[in-house]
Image: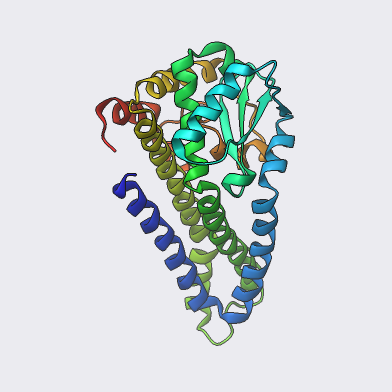
Length: 285
């Protein structure tokens, strides 16, 4: 595995934690405790039921071995190479070429592929995609994402509470002007920064899964070729953005909404395809 990507993820998580502690120093123990309990409750539920929620959300159906024998064969092979149990295999009826993995642990994991990706990719390309998704399972990226989401959720909830506090004079003993400035930063800037860090963690995990897949298959060419095809396909078959699909966009191997440009890339769940392909083809892991 790439030590650089692992270190980057750890550093980003530390940054989120530091932001949370900074907020706690202004808000106090009682309000932060409420935010922690609230956010943990939501994320614990989503963590343990994430597989069922995601699969139901996209109307995924269990792929039978008789109808999807090649897909099952590729999933079995990639799981064997990664040293994890074979995940459950699902199919999503969609022209968009994409795939995702979900599940709290390798024993509860599932891999879902759209009909579009199964029809469009060659065997080597599809194997690269599946190896990437299996890598997410092996690397416990669902756990990493949940931890990041929990911390970011606490920060966002604390910011929401801060906006209410602003209506009642701020943080008690502090000077009103000083308190007002602090509340402005807390209520507006902190959740934005938390979201950017959370999404940066997601991008880091994508690079890590690419690297793990290439190492497992001893080649990154199949995955690199697949990513280029997926990006082209998604331009013509993007998902319609709504609150549901936006919260699960990070699950997919390629951004289901298409390519992002400029500063908007800060809020992208995936690194640019060109960068991923360059790393895969040059072995820069």
